[in-house]
Length: 74
Image 1 (cartoon, rainbow, N blue to C red):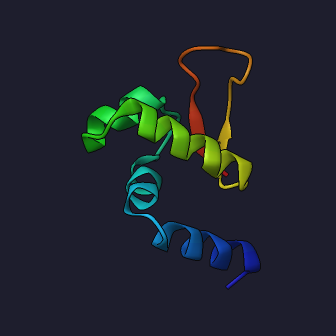
Image 2 (image 1 turned 90 degrees about the vertical axis):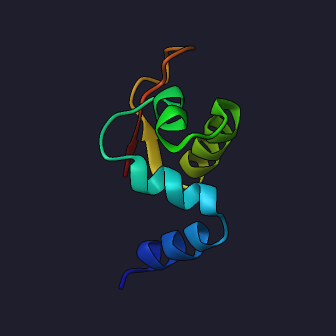
């Protein structure tokens, strides 16, 4: 197992919400779409996606868009 995979596993184990978001991110999705699917607040999902992006686990594919940012797994 590579170092990045190990870091991801540890990162996801620390938060059930992170794991739910990761498991649900099976293609380009917005925080709103994910929030509706997992029945969580959009603001909480957005916050986690930004955190996951900073850690290098997800990528925003349209960062120039202020609304409707779509995220994918890296």
